[in-house]
Length: 270
Ligand code: DGL
Image (cartoon, rainbow, N blue to C red):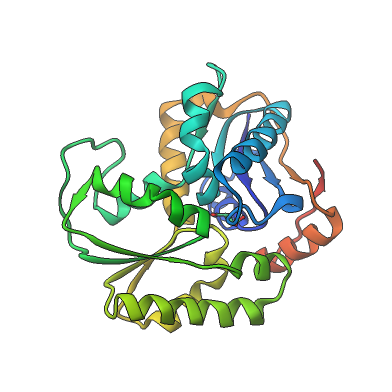
């Protein structure tokens, strides 16, 4: 019984960490497509092709359920995958919906009509591809009315994190927050709509100010997965071992992962 966690690179580790803490008995297969990161500057076809290839490898590793812990893949590829690609006995879930349910104060699967919610001015920080897809605004419109969303495409942040250049990543975070604030001076909530960004959460919070509530996905996805597995225990799949796979350089990726999670993580070639 293994569940797959997919990301273009290191960002999904923020989700992996939260799900491992929440579900310590479930083995997880993590797949980082580091050789092809960042996805956020690719077009939708490219993201679809890379994501489906990676997910196929996770089926082989014993996963029947894969979480796309990557907003870019969730925004640019998931719907197409669900419509025509995923085999009947497999599932692929994204990371958008748990976040939007939290923002709009909804329980899982509450499909009642959109209504007014507490937050009115929301800043969305995401990759250029996620911003271009408008998937966040679309999912939000199903659930809430009267919410003003200003999106900031945060070019460069994922590259800097993947390269381990956290000084550059911090400088870019500050300049993207400044750019957002010129468009929306007083957001009441901010969404970190890329799984890499929680690695920079303190810097986002600091640049935004203490009065802005920052929503980040890891714990929301963990609760949502625990709930899903309670209802669908058969989706845990046949795999029985945790595995860390990368298309990049395993020793370099292992070092970065160990640094981010502050525990030893060993990747092997996918
Ligand atoms: N961490 C991913 C996301 O949530 C992808 C970032 C990228 O590869 O550009 O969007």
